[in-house]
Image (cartoon, rainbow, N blue to C red; front, side, top):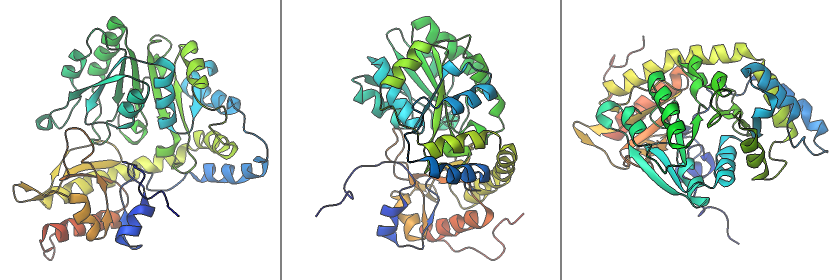
Length: 372
């Protein structure tokens, strides 16, 4: 009897496989989830909705779509809910059937995977490590005539870097000029100080732009799976809906999403924690000799170093030291010395630092850690 152990995955959060390999005691920092867990309001709503789960869920997520529209200022007909943002990325590619797709490198791998599955040729625009992998005007210049679809992650995954508003404006205009669909993934934007830079309010004026959001990240609903897109191109919304099964969002997920939208206190507490722990984690890693990308989201990309030399197989080294991080070697432009860690609490950051010192063969000197 075989199992699914050999099936490819390529993302963080697979604690089952990791713990089979490294043991139950390892700390998982590989998935970019909310350090506070699930929104309490969302959890209560999901539990209450289980009793109604003997019936099919609303295939059009009407109540949830209306709540999203009310919060974003969009028309309910511009909202499509899905089984997480990844579901919507695949639906968009199947609906549009693009021939040429442009993505950054490195960035979230599902854009290229979905595009290739839909028959597209994927072109990658390399981001420069010397500029902290910022997506700048060189990416705008890469949007050439003939490009059908462009994916942008803001903030980018795995770098955590946000796109400057002026660059995003130029990208919106450039895609309109060449006739390309622009998909802006804002799934992690809610964790950042730039959360007000969302394109939600602009979708009415730019029908070629699609904005993606996910409850899985900010609201801690990774296991429930819930995301949505906004687009004023209602024909695209309809085609994306038809590109997948009609019951992609469960009744508990729909109820949890409605509740999460009103749980603003939970979001505020999350941002407060991230604002404290992200810079602390980055400072600790830099002091340990790592090459740290100054990200702005709820995760940190860093390169494990011994002196001036990058250390290959960094994820395995850190796992042996008790902490699971995201191996970034399957991101274009990165190798196995690069890893990504989720920002959580102080104890988890300290555990990561200890693992880094153990992995690099260094000893933590008394008083060498910044506990400020």
